[in-house]
Image (cartoon, rainbow, N blue to C red; front, side, top):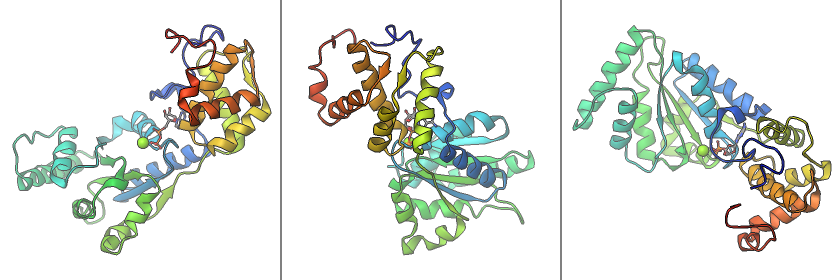
Length: 283
Ligand SMILES: Nc1ncnc2c1ncn2[C@@H]1O[C@H](COP(=O)(O)OP(=O)(O)O)[C@@H](O)[C@H]1O
Ligand SMILES: [Mg+2]
C-alpha cells in the first residue's frame, strides 16, 4: 500500500521468510556459530532456545541454506505428533522409503541409512522446531536414537529448537539422561537497541530504499526498541504499521508519534481499519 509512495520495490517488513532479508544480529550470529560447532563437531544433541519471533526458525533456515551441500537435513515442524509419526516424517525427509513400515522396520531403515551416511562421510542432521511441545516420551525415544554411534562419533546430530520453556522441559528429572547428552543449551539473545536501528535500515535498503530518503527518527527507534525488546517479529509488525501512518501523513521521516499510533493499532486491531487513507485495495 505504501510501497509506491516510498519507491520501494517490495514490502520491507513482510513476514515471509526470505534469505535476502536475513540480518545477522549478534544473537543470530551466535546461534549460527553454536549450530556449526555442534553439527560439524558431531556433538550429538543440541538445544537452541529463544523468545517467540526472535528468529530461531529464520536462523535454522539460513544455516541449512548455507550448508545443505555438506549435510543431510530432516526438518520436523509439527511437534504435536507421536514418535512413530515423527520417525516417519524425518525418514521421508532423509529420502528413505518407509511407506507402511512398522516402528521396528523404520528403526532398521534409519540404522541402515545412518551407517551408509557414515560410510559416505555425510552428516545427517535432524532439526526439530517448536520442540518445547514434545512429550517426555518422544524426547526419551530421541535420546535412544543418539545411541547410534561409532567408537568416537555420533551418527546423527539432533537439534532441538524451541521457546524458553524448552529449557524447563529439559530440566525435568525424568529427562536428566537426555539433559546430560546436551553439552550446552544455547539461549539466543534479543537484538540490542543499536541493532534494532540497523535492522530497520537494512530491511529498508533491501526493499529498495537506497537513497536514504525514508528514515525512522531516533526517538521512534527508541520507542520501537522499548516496545519490542528487540524481537524481529514485533519490529516488523510495528514498522509495517508505522510506514502506513507515514504514508497517510505524506512524510519521509517516521516519528515517535507514528510508532505510538502503531502500537495502539496492534493493541486494538479494530482501530486500524478506521484510519483515513485505508482502503480495501491498500490492505
Ligand atoms: N535475523 C533476521 N533477519 C531478518 N528478519 C528476521 C530475522 N530474525 C527474524 N526475522 C523476522 O522475524 C519473523 C519471526 O522470525 P522466526 O524465525 O519465525 O522466529 P521464531 O522462530 O524465533 O519464532 C520472521 O518473519 C522473520 O522475517
Ligand atoms: Mg519458529
